[in-house]
Amino acid sequence: MAAIAALACTPVAFAACGDDDGAPAFDEGQLVAIEDVAEADTDVSVRVRGPAFRVDGTTRICSAILESFPPQCGEPSLVVEGWDIDSDERAQTEGSVTWVEDVELAGPIHDGVLAAAAAG
Image (cartoon, rainbow, N blue to C red; front, side, top):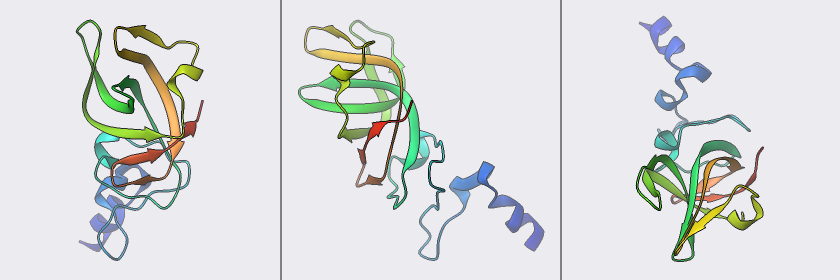
């Protein structure tokens, strides 16, 4: 059984692993799924990838893009601080919605907020 537990804590299965208080553990710069970190706090900078939206002054990076027009943020998502969606040349705006279909951002996450910088 110990071999199974050790195997479960490989980088591929990081969501099942944690530190001593049961919180997930992440490696610096690790690309993680938004679903896996939406409710996690990270002390290290992780990378997330997905569509980003600004609606009513709040920017979010989302786990999916909902196919409406203008498109909408699919949940779960993270609020993004420290990155200006308008700085991305691919940003599109329709009405009060600005979006980028695919962006990679990096930063630590606390209380559902990604303190971000463009990662690529």
